[in-house]
Length: 311
Image 1 (cartoon, rainbow, N blue to C red):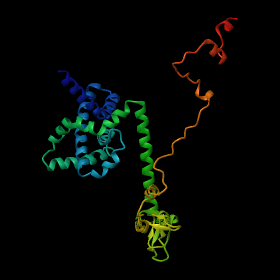
Image 2: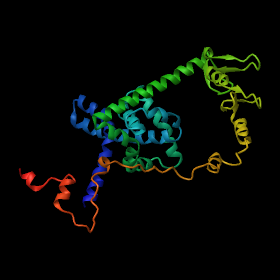
Image 3: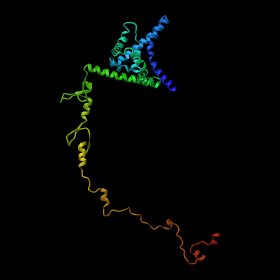
Image 4: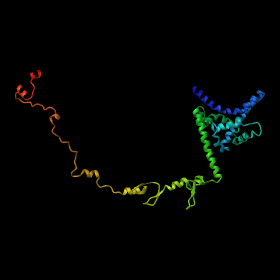
């Protein structure tokens, strides 16, 4: 039950996009004097505008397909633009209602020819949440946050700059102030290029800059952009590889020749031992003998007697 309620709330959220259809009828209802009759007339006008909206949608899908690229600048893309057109344009007063009626006529004729004049509004009414979600999900996510509104503003600015650039380029082409580059096939200003005196072809500055970067290989006389230095001269990549592969390798590596020398040392020389003095080597241990030694002999040898130490 919870999933069904969430699904229904999601569908109802996208049906809210149909509110622009009520703008024109609501205004007529508010300015009318007899509100009872005006309310019935408002309901009838909303239904009529909904029918016209469905035929507008059908016409944009077939006969008026060339207008679709221009409708994407409107909020919520094509459905949003058609809803604003069907909800704000006059419908009763001539000749102000002619744009809305004439725009809906191709879709109505297409539905009549395929025997779907009355069934097509039902199809659009059932599938409208899916169409609104597919075309307006990006707008819905960005219109609900301040950061998203800033993103939408930047997108509009970028689109205006790009369209202005395209319009300016089209104007220059119509005025004859541009020429087509023979190499890159792009339209450039006449002042941004020059003509080659040899083949009488016009090239832009970018192509001329690319042309002047080429240099001729002194070995094969080919013009190239890539190469490397070999014996104080620049060679193309092909000639450089050929010269590099033509050098014969050494028969015996240099490291092997050094190792096979007759006087070569097999290992580093060991450090020679030196006789250490008594201060460096420490006290000399007394030799152990079987001969008896008297205290006098020790005193004569430099030992200090016990009586002298106590004195």
